[in-house]
Length: 326
Image (cartoon, rainbow, N blue to C red; front, side, top):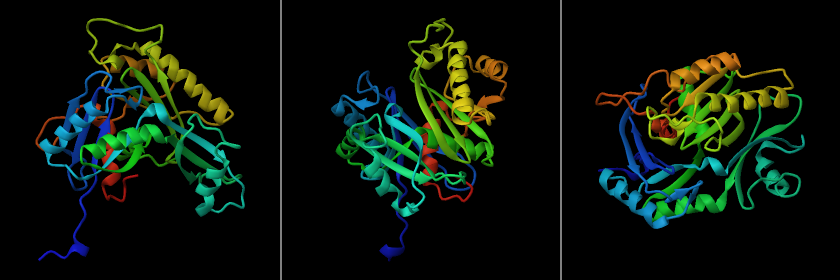
């Protein structure tokens, strides 16, 4: 006899929906990070474009097939908000506003004293604890109508959309799992995906900065036949480093007035010229650079998990009850 109120609920399924594919991972239970399942279902062009679901029927068809094949229909699901429609900002608030009043305070301020690039924002806010001289919070916002497009597709495929996370937090979770950051570091995550560079910066485990950079329009692009077919692999290391250098300088001088700079630079994504890129970063930016994962994660059945699943794995870490995981 099973007693309902002490039965363990199933963990939410972790799915990322990007322009090239839908990805699903299942992590092995336990302390050692390993992957039981990693499934990638390609999406036809323009099913998802520029962060928006533009062909709902096409996406539902893929999600429905994934749900049936892997036995995950009717499960709660967590997914990532598209990078194009995510904003992270450190904002001040009056000292007489209590922590449990923050969301209500910013609900009033958004649109009056705080302006966001979305006309229909959904947001979350947390106090920025390292700051002791003034009251500041980290505001993370996305666009509600865009998220609704993903939620409706998931619901049509018989999933129960539970929560939308953001890629910088997912990748930082995975980076922290492997690098064991203390919080003193200034960590720049350079995420190369679908022809874009998405840069996020963390300090004291807080996301302080995020910016998507469209590198497809960069003048310095290498189109050699030896490169991988993924569009991010057609970007020359020099074009990427030029953009990173601008953002590192912005962080150092505009956000810290020269008082701090990037100490760790981690690069995520499959990239044909990764060694050349890492060497050029070290040379131009005077910082040690490394891949997000020093070694690829293993499958429980043997073999290595492709780097294209890193974002999905970081999302899945959100569900794993482990004291050391952020």
